[in-house]
Length: 313
Image (cartoon, rainbow, N blue to C red):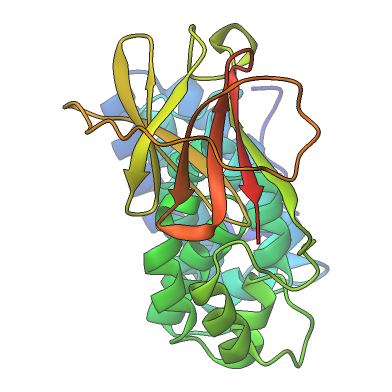
């Protein structure tokens, strides 16, 4: 810690005014951590976030309490560290989504913190922040939870697709359009219906035949596999793959992809390789209709560590 908090700042003034509540949180966190130093350091860092949310006025006490509760809890659990997704969310995302935070800080701050690791694993956290930053304010807790889920899917969290489509349909149109990254005034229901029928369609996405996504890759470069993978059979939301002596399931859509290990073996399906609208000079080793949609195939090749998702019609 570099010095005492500035009591003239918005955060400092709030701490003085709400001293009993703040002291109780700080003491509890220090006792859990066994060292008050990391807790004090974390509070110093979050002061800048609080001041940014206060602007030139006083800090909303609800915002102050939500920020202090999240920060002290993370510090007590040693989650307030450089690179930790939760700390990044509090210091970088929360200031950007001020409209949502001011509407329901008691919901938004803990929700963003709780989802931070899942978002970091499955989606683009910067895009999630961009989508939520454009969202209109709402004090409906259910809508706020749905908005974070939808933004996570839209930013690449394909494993949440089914739940996100259901959640998006429950949101007011302006909020849904914002977290889906659609232009204001877009007929959201029409977009969701079209995407539900074709997971590779999205406004502005290329609709021509050819490769629409590459999935996987060599583990040494951040992919999931050490050996070249082979598509073995269809799966309900993607396809099954064999690599490294293991079975995997690949799911993908217009926004992202995911590769998940399976506990048991899949059923191999052998079929002649189809004619593909791609300029490859390589042998196709396996293919499957992506999620049962014959218009889009997931294809493995003899010399590729990545799978290609190919629109054929």
